[in-house]
Image 1 (cartoon, helix red, strand yellow):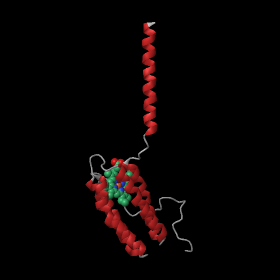
Image 2 (tube, helix red, strand yellow; image 1 turned 90 degrees about the vertical axis):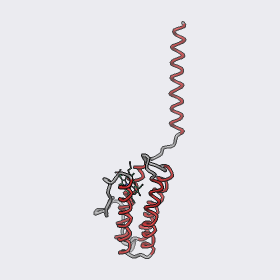
Image 3 (tube, rainbow, N blue to C red; image 1 turned 45 degrees about the vertical axis):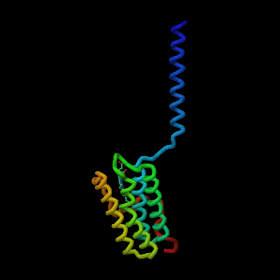
Length: 156
Ligand code: HEC
């Protein structure tokens, strides 16, 4: 009888522990890793290029906004990544090139856009190097990242 009671107590406490762990998991919201934000940024970076190439300035402005929003969330959720102060680095390296892109887009100036895009790309790569990820290099895309989105603006 005593043995039965002990076994029952152990089983009950295990069930309780599992239930508590389940609750903690359910209560904790999913936080995408820093690399997930970067993968999202990569797609926007590519779409941005094709939007500019097609002189679809509305879409280009939208993609710049999306890049900014994604990186703001990344910075909020990951002030540091593996001991590297990525939030501060994103701000100090990308604020100026993103502002220049916005200016080029507002001016609907395709060659200024191309220069600004390259400026952003260099800043992305410089931060990778500074964060000890110099092996991750981005460039002007040679192919649209997706085939199911139209980059040319209406009426063109
Ligand atoms: C803090 C400086 C920093 C800036 C600015 C930055 N990155 Fe990153 N990036 C990182 C780090 C750190 C990683 C590695 C993340 C990890 O460990 O998963 C990364 C990873 C990546 C990856 C690899 C993702 C994968 O899953 O293969 C790509 C692509 C990338 N970044 C693109 C960009 C682009 C495009 C920009 C500019 C618009 C940019 N990054 C700006 C720090 C930065």
